[in-house]
Amino acid sequence: MPGWITTRLRRHPDLETLRAVGAADEAGNRVEQPFYESAEQGDATSVLLAASPSLEGVTGRCFEDDQEAPVPCDGTGDGVAAHALDRGTADRLWEYARSRF
Image (cartoon, rainbow, N blue to C red; front, side, top):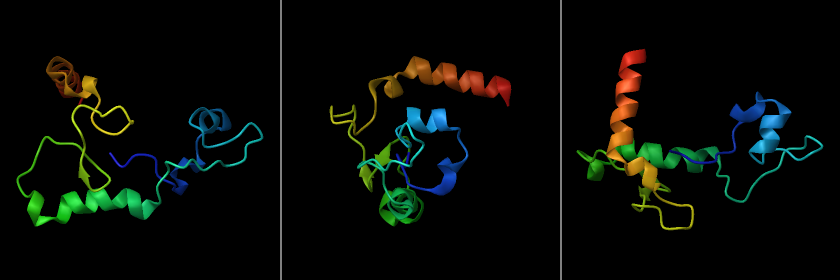
C-alpha cells in the first residue's frame, strides 16, 4: 500500500471527490497535504519488496515507508488496521472474489 502519493492519477476524479479526500479546496484549487509522498517515495516500498534479497520468502506482511508496518497500527495512523487482521473477514473476501472472477 503506497499511501497518499502525488501523481497525475488523481486528475480524473470530479471536484467533489477531490474535495472529499482533501486534494482540492472549495474553489477547486489543488491542495497538497503534508502526508502526501512523491511518486518516487511511493514507489520505494514496492521496489524494495520486489528486489530486496533480504525479503525473499517473506509473505503475508504489510510494508510502508520501506519497512514492515506495525501490527496492529500504533495509533499514529501508521500500521495495519485491526480489521485487516480479522481472519473471518479475509475468508469472506476471498470467497467473494473467487465467486466473481
